[in-house]
Image (cartoon, rainbow, N blue to C red; front, side, top):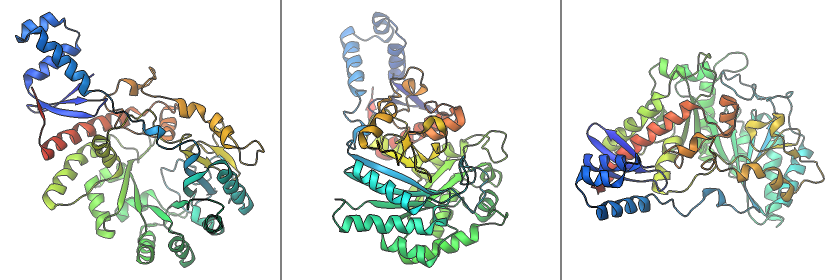
Length: 449
């Protein structure tokens, strides 16, 4: 189906499979709608005073324009390569974030740190199973509470590489709350070129309400000092992660305001702003996601008037998908290009599923652990195609090929990894429409009809 976008008296025909779009006039809009309604062709020809031959040619052209790209994003990486291994080295945290999905860092288990021998076993088993691991993500809880574990991973991987035991140097990343940034940790980050993501929810009064220490004290000033200290030595963090919640709305802080705020503190850094995932009864839950939809035009106007390049991951993902079209048959990498290991050595398709029994795959200490066994146990994730699933809203959604998603967020909101929250779907469809109109205005329209 071709989707017709309308703003005032302007129309754009959007082709969901090819992700192409064309500015059209009102007559072409009516014609496309008649064709898609199943109206007999002779009626259309008579109504619009066109020949059967011209109509047949137009229908053929429209079908050709909407042919999907010959590219499947899920097959980018071969089975003998793992894109990302997430190792949860700390089932503990020094913060009490209001919206934490991981039960303040301990998930569904007791607070603990991953044993160094178990970290070694995990690395050895995965490097034996896969010819290459592109990224190892050091995760938690708060991973930097386990300095020795973090240090061990950095040193052990480097030793394996320098001794020729692994062919490629694996990129190490970590996601941290930024409150623990000792000189020893900074030295590790610098020496082993670790990519760091730090969570920061924007202005101090908002951040401190959402992300306090366990004793209730604010963390903003400490994190900001640590970021400055880290950045001076390592040029990190690589990304700031923001959880946008109702407190931002209540204080009239827009997404553009957050981007300006972060740019003022850290120049030219990647920013991931995500809507909070929470029960609607929670005070921090968003009443709606209009701020994300409105951000598309606000950021576009700001960039045009200031010659800036502001953006955030969700918006940039939509823009990149239109620029480099591909078919998105899976929500995310969980169980496909991402595998996660808990502090006790249990293997899951994603860190968001840690300690959820239905998602348990196997134990890293299992003598049967191998790539073949892991591929067999993740087969359902690898074979799932949301575009062919008639029970999935994605199969009929015009935004499916620009919309990623997260099976973890799906599960915690709808209790089904294959059903996205309706708020998320509505938000991305509206954002896509605005992005398409902005691209048409900035690039010059391709007229059809």
